[in-house]
Image (cartoon, rainbow, N blue to C red):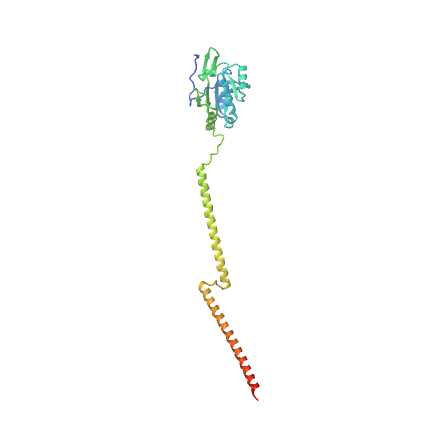
Length: 262
């Protein structure tokens, strides 16, 4: 495979070579006017004849909406005539810009132009991420990156979209345990306060009525006193009954004596 004279491939941190190329969708796209809006993903494609490139760009196009949300733009560049560029656009079913470099100037400036007997001149596959200042932020020249990796790099540059950090499960468990412990302690405090309030209310009621609940000794003494009084009452009743019987006997005896006297 013969190589044409190329500029050096731009390295990470260097300024990206400028280009202004026609788009298969119509109009021209200038790199420097696009980077002021956000990062630009520049993917050089060999052409429609490369199934590998078509599949890569189709997968990249599937992430295009997410890349746009992160303020990124996807641009594909191929050394081709306008009709071939439009065929590539239809084959990949992408809304992304597909630019045709029919003069091969962009491919040379980026150090990627090469030629073979079967396909002629074409750009060597490579992908670059150009930041908002027009510098190469990331470069993949040996292998195609995964679209998810490209999206992640764009998001790193812009900080978009904002991602909420998931709460650590251990921290969540600890927080839950602390909360449960706090609730338990609070419940115990409330119960203790309620008991204290009831005791105070009971004391206040006793003080206002002027009575106190008798203790065990008082209760026992009262019981003995009651028994004693009951015994005295029974004895009194027995004495009264005996006196009554004696009185009746005396009356009967006196009556009998009267009846016997002449």
